[in-house]
Image (cartoon, rainbow, N blue to C red):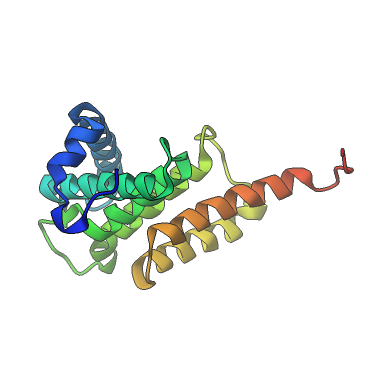
Length: 183
């Protein structure tokens, strides 16, 4: 069922996805945000704005609903889940400064969180991976570039999706190096 954008009602989103699913997504993101804030040097300078987090979650589900309706699909893949979640977290900026200081990194807490969120997705089940010393410089440059893009470039959910898909393709290519054609 295609929705008329002018009559779009967020109550329909809650009805369509169910309060439990929306609350589960909210709670998961809240947990990630709390862990990130607790580990940061700014844990006493920031807080989660629950109204902004709520809006990010509702916007995420509204986008997913439109996407599913447009493409006539039942489920979306895990990459889209993370790309659209990251996008709306970046747009809504649920981490809010409550005690400002002169550290410029404080102004970019939301972008740093989204970078961390995306990197966590890229690691997948390999949470305890230690980057080799020989690869540390390249990895650090990758992380800094990701943060730069999230801070200063026009970001779309589709761009984030392409970024995550590219990483997946890169891992496939890496595993395939030196393997003879099996077809």
